[in-house]
Image (cartoon, rainbow, N blue to C red; front, side):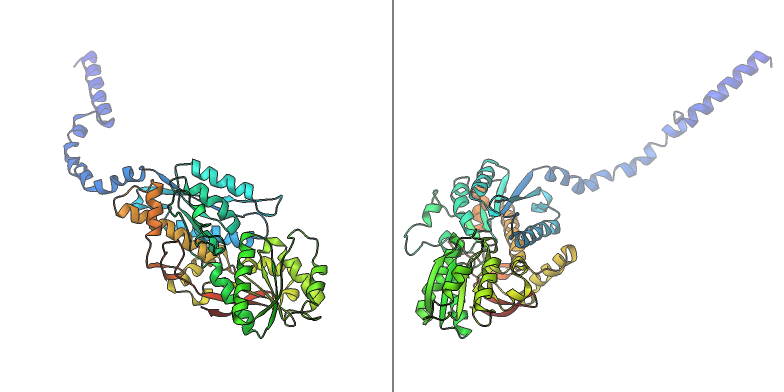
Length: 443
């Protein structure tokens, strides 16, 4: 063999080796058909693959409108936390993963007022009405705020509004002194507002009977001149007259006053030269409630001497901290529902889950935030189960009102035609050692 032939054969051998190493040779190509069985398994995996289009169907947006500025934040932050917890439990998805849920917590308070602001709440409601992706509006915290937003949202679909905290009866029930006032909140003629908490026509009645049960025969009533505060105070006064509890005075206060010593001095002699047995205050903590209590104690002594009683608006740690534990000792406040320890199993699980994520839970409205979000999710799921369109506001609103025998964290309950819950329990708490402790639950 000559050298030129030997060189040519060497090149051909090397070339064939390179082709095999790079996968371009015949041995590799012939193995492809052998891999076919593995490839034929792909159709079997199609159920998982079909979920991708379902997830791409869209996003449903839920917003809350609560005062996230001011003293109410100690309550409202736990409400928002609870709402987020509920969404995390469903991985922010509904309808078998067909839709994602987006949630935003809006603030309806302003630094200028230090509490909910009518201008801000109105702006929130209009913003929600204009955003077609929003299918539920969770709020408000203050009844006066709800009075402004209900008519706006009612004309936007209507857009379902579900409150964890509003208690003024007139939002759902016609005012006895102003027939038809409630209907004026619903210009479309369709109800679009519900709440998971009992109204003040229950809270005020229970409160008056509770004050009498403490041994009081006389009471002075104060309110912060807001829809919620005056509303519960008025119900308290009407019930007091029915049960023989003498009201020696009822007036509104200035929530921005520097102090209330002159007022408390007047009240200290309002009962025939002596102090009344009790003072009932219809107000929220943002309305200077802590200062009011401090001046009451300074002028009339501790809360055993003259009872100091209020509604859920002051049942918050911020009220105790603002007044000081010693000053607040013995003050009473009511809240709809039962104490955490008496919630059903699902409610107990909520407390466990909440505390595992956020720490010790003391604010009673947290569970109402959780329930509110649960209601919104239930309405969406019901619409999907019926083959409806969960992006349609009117359909979601109708599903909310259709909820009956709901098995939630608060127990089993239903919405009535007005949007009120069937649960009517009310619990009173007393301040002991710087914390609220349950006294008892009443019907």
